[in-house]
Length: 410
Ligand code: PLP
Image 1 (cartoon, rainbow, N blue to C red):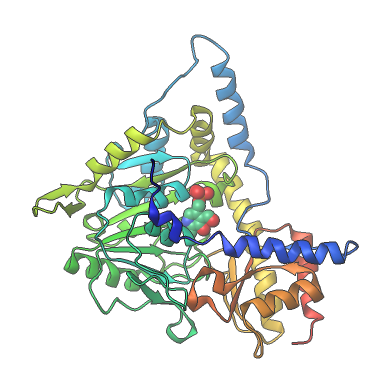
Image 2: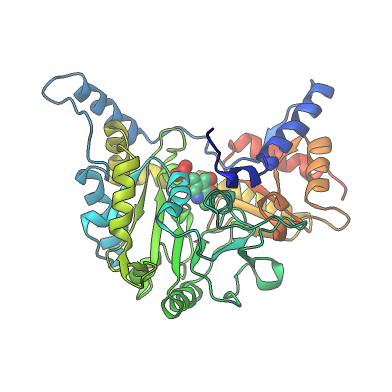
């Protein structure tokens, strides 16, 4: 008889997005003439930059000729891409990295989800709350969660609330934690923290032998000077942090799939006998055993992100989405709503008006404005009373959605 990993049985289905789909379907069935505008899911809508498309076309042509055909590549990624990443994303900020500290992958979802493989099931994990659900669910799968309580919290996970009360800057944990997930700029709140605040986390991790898993998927949206683009801008961070970056949100690779993880060689965790173990070696072992490399064609496309033309085109993509963000922010603030995010991230996080909870506001927006957003509570208990709208929509739809919302009475 084969037995299943019991941890999977603890997980509920993906309640958030299936419940959204259920409510939207019920609404459209009852109101087939209504045009729904979706500002819910964090997927991009503009096509890939032309520089990337051309690079991929030419890589396809290489695949058609015996002399330039490529089969399996290095699991960790091709040097042509890793070198560009190091030069542009890190050296340009005064950070040095070796080629074997960067691991190309098929996405930050996979990387942030798989990283738990190299950590013991006994680690105490902390997450900010609300949070990108992958961090929590994969720790449930890995046996680090304990049981779910009636408030939607796992008993062995430490939740660090991010709410209006602390201006979305999480406080240091009261009890020591072994692993800490940070995501800045943040999904879902769209907020971020300053370099000085990030330094407190790096110092905490250094004092407590904590490993920080730093998700910088939205780094390209940072517009303010005092926000770090990489955690390694903070002194000593290489000894405590793994960083995750993605081409999904800057260059629109959500459907094309390319990302990378940085695992510095100075970063260690402990074996049960007290020996220090280099996490770079472990991740390399994991990556090369379970992953066979991101497609050559895609890596050539990602390389073009760093060409002059690619950089210019990406700037345009980001400014398009951030103009959407401004339209949403200003529209909501004009209605007297309390709004966060949308300055360093493509998400707008609003406090729902008095008299509503997250789902109540969802129903109001869907029913009366025919606009779909995401109830904050779906991202964790501290998200109750908040609501997320994304700036990744098409411009005309974003403007129309705001016009409709302006006509609502709260
Ligand atoms: N990390 C965060 C915080 C995200 O919001 C997302 C996607 O929405 C991802 C990672 C996933 O990125 P990728 O497309 O590289 O898997």
